[in-house]
Image (cartoon, rainbow, N blue to C red; front, side, top):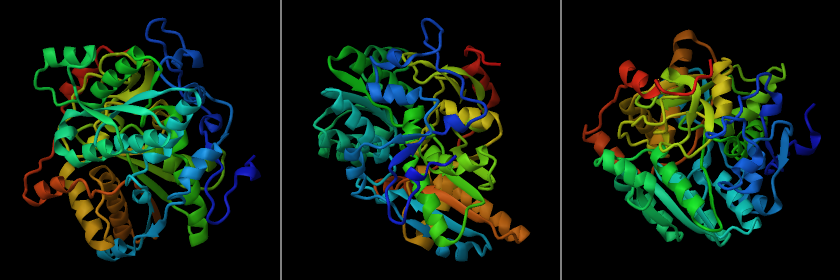
Length: 454
């Protein structure tokens, strides 16, 4: 039964996050301790994460987890975010489809990442933690956590994937403005980084590499915790404010989506938008019929990866996660959508994909920038390269409606703006970007030694 206590009224911020696991017929397989090969307990995670995040990670019974008042107070700065009908894009495409987008780019840091950054920094502060570490790809997560850390008086070290560190200097500047230390990864400051550089001197970094360095620093620094921006269950949980608001806003608009679309790196913004809508389907109610995760063709874990146990990082410091993966040693191409260059999907998303409750499409880099340009010129907002994958998938859905004449309603998540990504747009307009294909042989090689699920 739906809890009336947590039903939104017009203009409200959610009082609780939605935990999808209790509603899943097939629960995600457990995280595995890499040494004992036994299912993890919350206390196994305490050396790395805050206790609250560790407990939320393994919570399989509570559908609703209340948002602390101090976190909601910060959410009020920009939440609820707008739900916008993209009439300009509809007109450009000449489609009978109605297209809506949830505009998460209006947050102070320009993306959805602040939803979880504030929550995790709050829990660390409540626990008496003084230092935190993290990784970041494109810099959206690093910027969000830098602001949250400053608000709660925490010292933050961010390991930023080297290719993005060089491609996106202004994201680095944002983090430094908020007071964070930013290190290009792989670096010589950790054992994991030094090992990678020794074997691969020109390694341009990956999220798996940066996670290894951040976890190592957290585990070797007194009163320090690691804070993660995607993939794990508690991060997906915090992002559900997006979909809970969107559902109420769609009701106010007098429509309901037939298709929900979001870009996919590790799963945070896709989960945030999709899970609140998906709960109705899981409970046998009428609702959204299709959920589409849009990932880069150069890092196609959901569309071409294998469903196995794998590490969340390159060095093997993290628990083993049941995921669709390309292998933790997979080195993705240097695309500009740095936030999507992650080798695997979270346990919940992977189980839902395995059960065919969600679907995935892969998008070429040039198609994503073409879609981004169409959106910018018709709606006035320049999207982040990551979000552009969702726009490309949405355009494809809308064009199908043009062919069939179906009047579907499509909802996608604009997870962030691209105002600090203009160098990428410059390269696109100069015809200096390329598509990247992963071969079957590369995937087979990077996944051959994984822990078997099936």
